[in-house]
Image 1 (cartoon, rainbow, N blue to C red):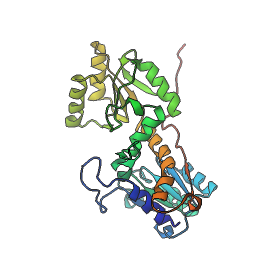
Image 2: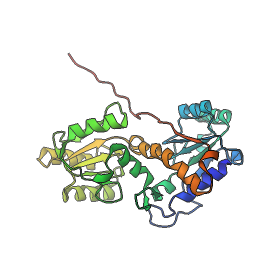
Image 3: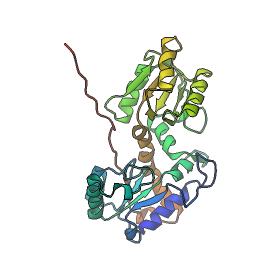
Length: 297
């Protein structure tokens, strides 16, 4: 199996409607792109690595285990378009390019396709592969309010601090941050995607939380303004609201871990039987954040 054949098989297994625009994914603008190593697309695929982001360490580990295809959810070079011209004089960029050249493989970004849906539901229907993987990791598939995998209602209320502890343990994090009422009894949980300080979007989310039974946000990006301010005020006024800040990569990484489980099915669906498939393995990036506690005497 060639690397380009593996990529096409995975891409064809996913949906083709953009999850964020509701329109067909445009090949010219999609973030599903080969980010590095186009000259190696015709090479035999020796192994496939899935990851949330191809860090320098992940590239080294891919080389050490003999994989020449990295399927990443995010871009290599720290900007959404993966533009290299604006980084040409950056020494870290240059060092990472040398590392990629030494490895000699292909990095393919699978972003829009996995969000568009993968046939993961019991009835074969499509589900967002990233958030389905997160729900599966936590054992929350039966707690979904709908198939979006963004709204959950646990069978029993749970204290926010206990929920945060379970998330840290299950996701293998160091610690996490909680805003608002850490003693709140959480009955409904929402993943709000991005909270970036955009007035219109954040105000809409604030009003939705305030007018609904949502007790807890599991946040990717979360700034100190807008939604965070609302959560703190609501908690101080007895509304029992909280937000647990996991981080973007920490929350989405389980989806790429689960991707390693279904890629063999995608390859088989394209006609490549298991015995001729390359190995598939997930490599974790590890907790985005490190924390230092200062204990004052």
